[in-house]
Amino acid sequence: MSSKGIILVVDDMPGKVNQIVRVAESLGYDVLSTSVLEVAKDYLEENEPEGIVLDSKFFLKVGDKESVHGAGNKMLSWLKTEGKEIPVLGFSYIPFKTTYPNFWGQMGESMFFDKSIFEKFLFSLPTKTDQSK
Image (cartoon, rainbow, N blue to C red; front, side, top):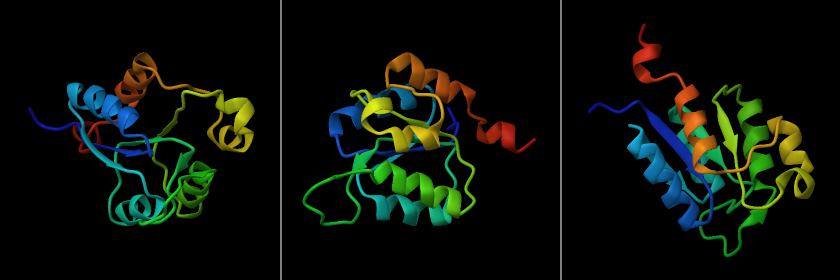
């Protein structure tokens, strides 16, 4: 089976990343994951995945000892500045809309990660096959 494309996951919690990888791969996507903003940016400078799954808290640089609240905002701002129009799904197990209003202000409607939301997000993405037409 050929891949539908790549999903980039940016999060500092391996358990959540593993859940996302299992669902995405079962639906035919390859997954690249990182917990570091600078690694995600480096990847995105050369590549354009079909979608990004983004938490608001992760590491800014390789070697950082603590993840940073608001890193998702930095990523969204960078995507906008770079003119990258890649679908983004923000997620968390905590009530983002009240805890991180600036993050959700950039994201639009609030979405919380669960399998059904994630599957809907993946099904809504154009695949490499769609893009070659």
